[in-house]
Length: 399
Ligand code: PXP
Image (cartoon, rainbow, N blue to C red; front, side, top):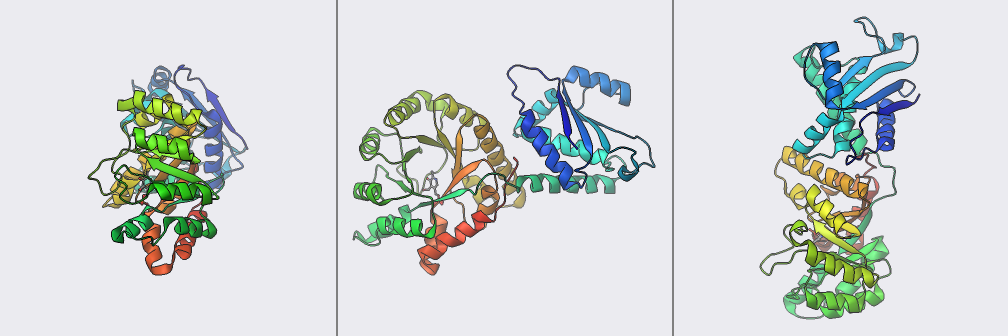
């Protein structure tokens, strides 16, 4: 049975992807074992919602969601319905927008949560009945959200391996071994879809010679990570990697710390992007999971964004990790909606990767430290394959 969506919400600067909402709602019906029932969803504004809320609940204010079961009565169960109709879910998009903003989620995420909430009411859950019922409903909401997040429809997320640390070991002795060029070949043979190296201005690990040789030997895709400094831009224009990722670079940092402040240096970054794209080199901007940075990246013509996963990986509690995960999921979704291609990376390891890899809109993960350090014990080929197994079985996400 179809999901029938009517969109009465016509605010010109608000894009509502009705197709995606319908697909998500149909999947929810499936997850709730009511895929053969019809469901109506109506999107309205606060004024209309206030009228409904006043008429049906005696409350003179808008609310986020109302649900009206097809048959309203204490003894009715879904299976007793004469026709296979669940009823109506009515959502105020004005309220959903405010809630999305205050909880730093995308509008789509918030609408999806409200649909889940409404659907659970239509299928017999009621958080107002008792504390126990409220808990039950909340648990079911969380379960449905996470099941939507882990059911992807796009091909598997790619894995690009950052081989900087191989060069770090070489530089520690100032010799010629181990060679990041050899490491890159092993990673490709093990199934990596790309090789990443960061040519830093201080040349602490990767050297100019490495990038030149990698350009000749990498058969998948060479992604040159770099600061937007003139000297390095010229090298990139000369060597022509398959793409560049612009990152902030500080002399004293151990590794790249935060994401780029795109909003604060739009002009400078736009100029570098233009130079690169004129030379046929797509540009990715390494940014924190922040909707303002996503928009600015889109505004100045980036092809990709790479979303910084560091805070998610470094989280010290499950609650904090969950919070950071949702920021990444929202940012990735928004970037995808704007037409940006989405990569992610930094700090990902054998525990934290699966959840990120399950996000449908992420093209590629850039992973270095975890794989190279595991390789010390297991060998590089094995370490890459283990990571690929995790990504392969990570599932596919709706958000
Ligand atoms: N992405 C970017 C932009 C980075 O700077 C780094 C670190 O070099 C990575 C991904 C990989 O991070 P890690 O080595 O923690 O996997």
